[in-house]
Length: 146
Image (cartoon, rainbow, N blue to C red; front, top):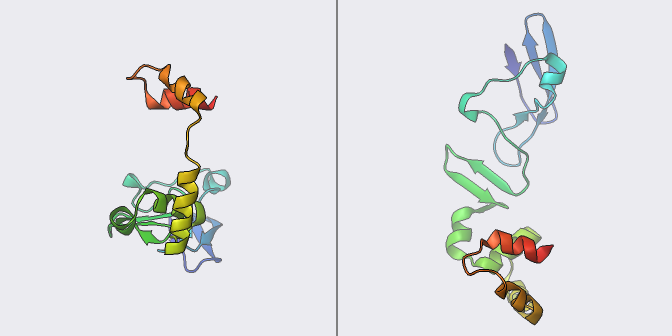
C-alpha cells in the first residue's frame, strides 16, 4: 500500500495493486494534516489498520486538542493546566460559552449575572425534598427536567 500526503487542500493518492484512489487532505489547526478516510470503505471496500490508534484522529474538534506523545491538552487553545490551576468554575463556564477567557470586567459582569440568576424556586425545593437523601443525582436531575 502506497500513501503520500503533503498539504491541506491537496489529495493523497492511495494505491493498492493496480488501483488508485484520491483521498482529501485536511489541515489541522494545530498539528499535522490528516488524510480523510471517511469514505475509504465505500470507495475501496477496505478498512485501515492502526493498532492503538497511534495515527488516527477520532474526531474533528474546534474545542480540544490532544497530543498524548507530547503531553499536550489544550482547551480552546489554552493549556488545561492554566485553566485547572489558575481559573475557577465560572471562568471555565465563560470559556465554554464564549470561546475565550474573560477580561476582569467581563468576569465580574458574568459572575454577577450568574449569581443573580441561580436562585431555586421554593416549589422546586419542596420537589427535591421528596427524594431520598441517597438518591442518585442524575435521577433527580432527569426527574426535575421532565
